[in-house]
Amino acid sequence: MKSKLYLLLFSLLFAWSCKTPEARRPVEVKSGSSINESVERNKERFALEEKDINQLMEKDSLNQYITSEQGFWYYYNIQNPTETELADFGDIVEFEYEVKDLNGNSIYTKEELGKQKYRMEKEELISGLREGLKIMKEGETVTFIFPSYKAYGYYGDLEKIGVNMPIISTVTVLNIEQNN
Image (tube, rainbow, N blue to C red; front, top):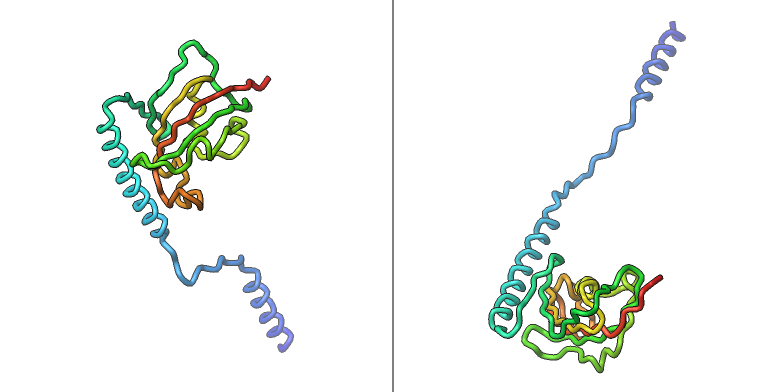
């Protein structure tokens, strides 16, 4: 009798222990609301930046601004209609540029920054400038207005460009060395 009882107890214990494991549930559930709040703050910030940029463009009746699909605005200071080559992946672009705030105050001059060489899509560069160089030909000078998310974003450059600061950058492409 005892052996049957032990056998029954052992069988029940064995059957109960073969149950599939259940995932542990978190003690506290986060809803993701901080992400949603961040998205809303960024939308509000961009709307304010865009308003300031639109006011700047309305005041500037001398230049014809073009809105890019990448989220920035620009106009040609010097256009080179005879040149046909645009920089492509891996090409080396030599350029110089300056950076100003939306009030036109100089942040970095061409002399401070010097001539730059950039291998297209293979080196780090702010996204607005990287995309801007793609639409420029050798010998052209273009003035770009970059919202903060296309410029130095949330951190700035940790020197002269502040947090979430839109910028104006005038860029001259000096040379495009094609990658064979």
